Length: 258
Image 1 (cartoon, rainbow, N blue to C red):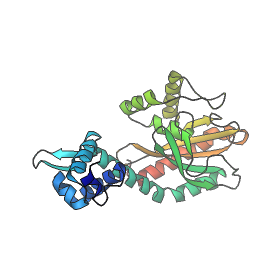
Image 2: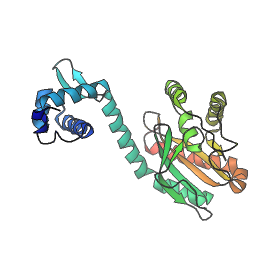
Image 3: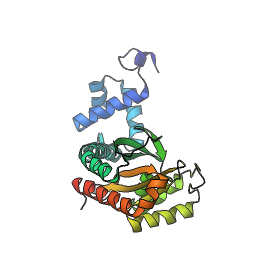
Image 4: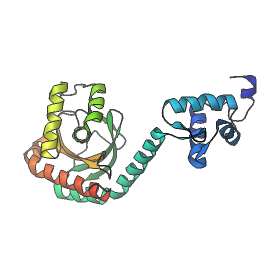
């Protein structure tokens, strides 16, 4: 950092903060030149050009060839849509999850995907619910949870292949699927049944049934599950799986899924 840069307000802040400041500016301005962005944000021109170039490389900004100005890119739009959809899910889903918990009397979860994991964002407990290790905010792998497998099975083929290529199939119990071919075969079964099964694959003694929630683009944006003791839930697989699938379909319709 140059002495001139160091003297500017905000230039002592980190690159991440400055990048986010630029994104906020372009979100409000629509489009602008780097010089205009520098003036509006208080960043030096050199820092603005450097960070904007990195953001363009990642797809968060793009150049409008007609005006030679920068604007938000496809990656920023994608993240914005994902955030809006996730917020919509948390608004729409709870009453339906409560009804599912009342029907099954077990623990019902709502999760979204972050990278190679599902993140638990909402929970409803039925009258027979027992304490689970997965609490709100907890992360669990995609490949061995009912939530994760339901989400993967609902992905378009090209995106699914890309995700599977990057997954580390870690073993957690004797039942965890660690072979890529076996996982693909399991995802085929998920599509045929309409729901996914975690048969003690993450935690011994815990059995889960999950289904994906889709939006107006027909893409999965979340997943729901019913979890409980294996001895109690396994015999109810068909009945509970059908209830989970039906509940996910209702939530999906509320999000615009046809």
